[in-house]
Structure formats: C-alpha cells, structure tokens
Image (cartoon, rainbow, N blue to C red):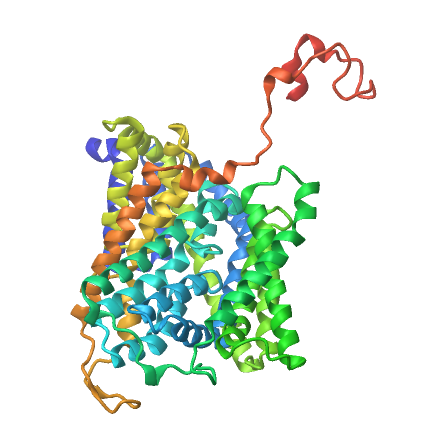
Length: 559
C-alpha cells in the first residue's frame, strides 16, 4: 500500500495506456480512470473531495469554449467541398498539367493533397478521394505500387499540418495559445513537407524511371488545334495577373509600410487570384479566345478553392477575423461555391452536416474525458511527477525535446492523434512552458511528429483508409483492357516507409531551425521598457479615480 501511495500517478498513467491498448473507447477510458483513481485517492487522503466539485464548471467551460466552434465550421467547409466533386476536378486537371513529365501523376497527387488539406482538414476524405480517383490511373500507366500507395497516404496526412487543420485547433486549445499563431507557425513546415514529398518523387523518377512513367500521348486530353498543350497561354495569364496584383497592391503597402511578410503575401495572392478569375470570366463570356483549354480549365478548377483558402486563412493571418469567424466564412463560402457549380444537393448537404456533428461530438466528448482524467491526475500530483521526470533529463531543453519526440513517435504506433493530443499534451505543455520553450513551436513540433501516427504500420489510419479502396484482387482495366495486378497490404505498408522517414527528418528540421515556426512573431509590437517614463501625474490622465498617487509605486498602476 505504501508503494501504491507513493507511485499512484505513474500507476494511473500506465493503467490508462493499458486500457487504451486493449481497445476500450478513449472517452470512457479517460473519464473512468479519472473518476476511479480520484475516488481511490480521496479514500487514501491524497486528494480533497472538494476537488471533484470543480468538474461541472470545467465541463461547462468546454461546452462554452468559443474557440472550439472553429472545429465544426472548418469540418463542414471541407466536407461540402469534398462532396461537390472538387477532388475529382483537381486531380484530373493537375494530372493533365503535370502528367507528361516523369512522376507527374504522383506530383499531382501531392499538390492536390496539399489543396485538400487546406480545405477539407479530414484525412479520411483526402485519402479515400485520391485513392478512388488517382490510384487506378497510376496503376493503369505502370506506376510502382509502393510509390503510388505511399504518395497517396502521405499526401492525405498533410491535412493534419497545413492550416486550417483541426489538429492545430485542438493543440492550440490544449496548450492555451492562439489558433491564429498556431496556423501561422505551421504554414511553412507544412509547405516544406509537401515540397519534400515532391522532391522524393522527382529523385525516384530519375533513379528508377520505370517506377514513375510519364502520361502517354493518348491519355492527354487538353490539346490545342496546332498540336501544342497551350502552356504558353497559362504562363502568360499567370504573369499578367501577377503584374496586376503587384502594382495594384503598391498603394496599400505605401500606406501600411510595416505590415508583416505573411500579410504582404496574402494580399498579393488574393489580388492575383481575383485578377486571374476575372480575365478567365471575360474570356469565356465575351468569347475573346485568348486562353487555351488547359489555361481555362486550370483557372476555373483551381482558382476558386485557392481563393477561398486565401480568403479564410488570409483574414485570420492579418487579424481581420478570428479562426471561428474565418471558419464560418469558409463554411458559407464552400456552400456558395458548390451551389454555384451545381454540385450540391440537399441530401449531400445533410450528409455533410451529419458527419460534421459526429466529428464535433467526438472531439468534445474526448475533451470532457481528458478534463476528468487531468483533474484527478493533478490532484495526486501527477503533474509534479511528470515535471520532475522530464526536467531532470540529461541535456536540458534539448534532452527534453529529443525524449518527447521519440516518446511521441513510439506512442504513435499504437495511439492516434486525438488520444495523443488529449493525454500527453496537457502533461508536456506545462513542463515545456516552465523550461521557457515557445509553446507554438512546441505545438507544431508535436503536430509534425503526431502526423506519423497516421502512417505507422500496422495501425496507421491513412493506411487503413487506402486499404479500403485499393484493389484486393487482379482486375481488367476498363480503358486499356490490360490485366492489372492487385495492391497488397505489404505494398501499402512498405510504400509508407520513405514518407515516414521524410516526416521524421521534418521533425528534426523544425527542432534544429525554430525560425521555420517562430516567424509568426515577426511584426509584433513589443514593449520597450526603457522608453516608459513615470511622472507624478495620475496614469489615467485625470483624477477621477481618486487621490491615490501611483508615482510612489509605479507597479501598482499596472496592477
């Protein structure tokens, strides 16, 4: 009994992990473990019964948390766009654009995965959509099965790191930091990760050309009457729109000389997208004949979702809207876009709302269970146990970060993101904060690391989603009439390994170069204490607050 009393916190934590590995539901495991060990601790006089009286207020605080409203808004935005056929159009268009080069279809999958990540934010939707659409095409034209399955699964997981990711919302909430700052900090690592996937595909297509062949001539749809692909028209359109956006934004930049870099980029991109879409609309309805087929197709398929992404994230980045307001604009914008394209029925909208409700309830209920567990865990001084365990690690801050990264990576083999976010982040966050680690940087580091949980064999959810749509038996291709071999589970597992290595290298890069994340601080107005002067006048500028003289104790005025 003395041993149990002295080690109740680690026993409680190990007991929780064991029940999760046995397959018990996360929410009920967290809540039951918290209540049972809380009652046990009260019986042993290790915790005051009054502590449980805080539970109703803590749970009500979760339900009343306005920040969490961003979860259903961004989820609805993504599901509406996914059901409107956006993924099919993007894969078809970008596949035709990059298909003629070696590895072009795989590059198209990564680019579409990044765009879907910035709209859907849901891994299952991204992986299943790309698995159904692009996997048969890649197999048809001779792509290596491991490369095809790996690039689809990895591209689908980009929705966990590229804003407006639901993962980042939950991490920001758990760490007590701004969602907007978390989005700004995660943007560059997310884009670098997507670029790394493309780089791997390009290198592999050079080393092993047969593993990623180019799209054959007969599969290329958008050909001009003169036999060209019409790329000159597309480049000219992009350059003209870029020049208009550049010169059109100069007035704003002159009147706002100290704006941050991300605000600068957002304004230029919004103007570029609006200009491109305007030129394409004038060309279509005035029948000017200035654009090629591929230029017009790319504009009408890619620009509207990109414009919506820049509008939603841009207003968050430049401070015009909160993440909740940005999510609401995104949800409304996605519905308008889908209706405008004639791709949204009442049935599809109802399905999207049902899925959004289920996911939102899932998140809230896990958060309730996590709150109950954390309350009891801290009641038995579990936070002090974790703090003493991690602060005493050799190597100081670096030792802590390396241990946390390895620990998270290993747990990701067995637990998914939500379990990791609601169990270990509340325990690690206070320790990181006490060590002086920037919590936005720490959160992005954890997000990139947790992303591997969707790719780990044998429990990675992205691999399960791809397995559900990949061909299990040999089949005859409907277009070429060729016999296509099945995709085995081993192909999917081995295909994920190179991309897991890339994700681990990205964790090391974020850890080594914090500026990849902390650029979000640039442009902040910082207080220079040396310029503060304290005089005999009342700090409020009048004596309406009484005759107290704050000059004798300037700190009292700020209190």
